[in-house]
Length: 403
Image (spheres, rainbow, N blue to C red):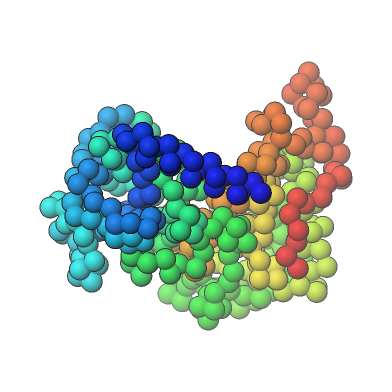
């Protein structure tokens, strides 16, 4: 009923706009942006979700460079775009001849953006769709392919940008240019989390020529013990030396230790890892994955790994419960850890954002006054500074376990 009502509202709004005779509904959207390390390989793809061809003479791409609040570059569009058709804007210097053949508007220079420049689709110079944030130079898509979230028939332009509006894929994913063959399209798809691809099972844990560096390979091991929400001990196997493993990508709040004091949600994160993820470990398949081209250990000698439980990534599940923050930006080695051409880190970012939206875990109180409070913490103690309330908090996961 709610979806039907929204559809009625949209149709009514479109009718009003057409009836006014001044502004027509604009079904044209930015569907993909390719921001390459080599700027000459940048691309912008548009999609016409309507049932009619659209003449492009009044449309343009407007670029806001390095946090500018004013338009710095304008690319006037020409020609037309067929119903349910794509339109690609690219440089005359593009290095891939197969891609070059698909470009509809050849721009006689490098497309002037590098991942922190807002890109706006405009009609009669007025913005109708936006990627990035006008007035901000925060990096949102360097060396990535970003594909609009959702089903193409439901695409709708919007001047309100947030990163979940697009799914970050690997760089230069040209196999998806002018089509929607990518398998993971919706928020629901991505919140199912990544899976292990066969190629990682067929490679080594340790780089064969650099013994202190990971190779992205996976080993199956046995649990020895659990320290807290992001550290556990595992048995040596196939290049993995055994011992303490620090969960790569995440940093859950602390529990009391020799050099650290407990923080809100620390014992909850520990409980989740011990009583939900790794409980009855002997009955589960536990796998560790190294990070390709990255150190196998951190400064204090602990191993660094991705931890898979029954084929599900622990780091993703911990982020989905709101029990950690995840890295803001993609490093080169992050782009080598993917599922269906999507970096694992993309999945973690969406999981974290969903937890934020719900006010779960560390994204709850006090940052979100309406969010949940940690059951292991007394927020009123010590004159409002707070203190540990219990090491055995009463807490259950928000999301069902996948096994």
